Picture 1 (cartoon, helix red, strand yellow):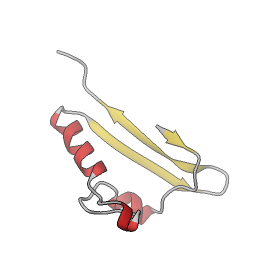
Picture 2 (cartoon, helix red, strand yellow):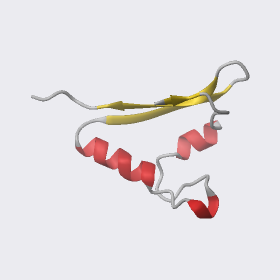
Picture 3 (cartoon, one colour):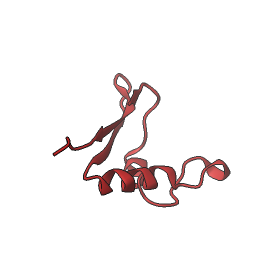
Picture 4 (cartoon, helix red, strand yellow):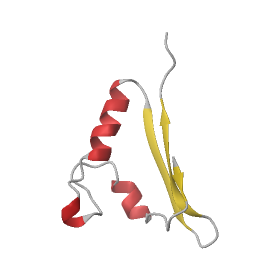
Length: 70
């Protein structure tokens, strides 16, 4: 999933999957991405994020990898 918003700071990207970390103030509890990543990892997958605030190429990309069936 990708967007062309203003992007996230490197500090935010480094903390985005930590429990209780939120950028939404009182409107967020900081559990959504932490729980999502945990579920994906229990299924041997990966949830990744990359983001840039570059003036020409700004935005955020979340990538979900799930293993194929055996």
